[in-house]
Structures are given as structure tokens and as C-alpha cells.
Image (cartoon, rainbow, N blue to C red; front, side, top):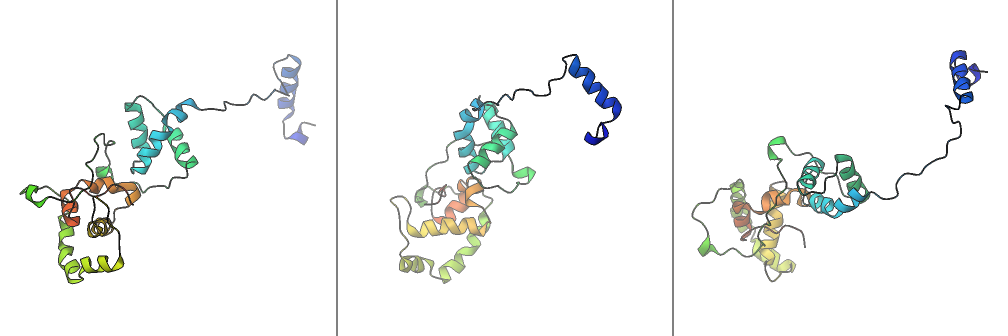
Length: 199
């Protein structure tokens, strides 16, 4: 009989002995797990905000711990999956860092009179595309296409901001904040800072 259920004779004898001694419950009552996860519920909105800002699971977990609502990587990953948020490419080690705490300034048209004489930038290469855009008469193309403006951002600046992301291969949903405050990218679009999200 032991072989029929893939037990050795000694193993089956041990089970019988434990059952007779009351140490083995063959029909345990199932106890359902908790229906709620308070830690996940408390952190859910912040996890979503941080993920939409392009932060990795590790960065989100570290930020939550610093803010007093700790949640491990598994919990963060579960929330991201439950919300249907996309995966992001793992950034190189030197590009990773803590979650930004400061609010970046709102995008608005650049006041050239207040432009600093020298500004450190990683995006000066964008300005090399300006002659080609002038040759294409980009302002006329944008006007003919009827692309809309907003109260703060002209249509041309909006298109140039999108071009800045494309020319630098920056994924808007993930890493736009890496580029938004860079003065070189902002100058390319004629703005004080780039917009942080798509219209």
C-alpha cells in the first residue's frame, strides 16, 4: 500500500504513528489569508506617482521607507502590476539616484533677458539641430498643421520639447524629469523648463 502512494514502508508507518498520537491532522480547516494589505493600501498612491515619474522598484521602496510608509520590493512590484503600469528599462548605475523631493518649476516661455551668461548642461548637442530646423521652416510647418498652443506654451515650443525628447531618446513616461530642468534642453524649446507631462 505504501508504494501505491509513493511512500516508503517506514514513511507510511511514521504517518500512522503520528496520526494515532494525535500529532497529524489529515483534514485541517483552511484559514483564509487577510483580505486587506494595509501597508500596500497606504503606499499605493505614492507608488503610482513615483512610477509615473520614472522611478525603479528599488528607488520607490527606498523613497517610501524615507517617507515613513515602508513597503518592500515585492509589495511595490505587486502594486505596479495591479495598476497595469508599464515596465521601465533599467537605467545605468551612474544615472540612478534618489527620488527628487523638490518640485520642478512650471514650464513657461523663456525670458532671454534673464538668461544666464553660462549654464551647465548635458544637452548642448540639441542646439546643433537648430540650423536644420530653421532650414525646414519648422515654425511655418507647425502653424500650417494647426498645432494648438496653451496659455503658457506656444505650439512651436511644445513641438520642440517633444523633439528634444526624441533627439535624446528620452522616454517621456519614465525619464522626462532627467531632462526637464536641463537649461540646454529648455533653451532648445525656448522655454524656462520643459513640460513634465504630455498634453
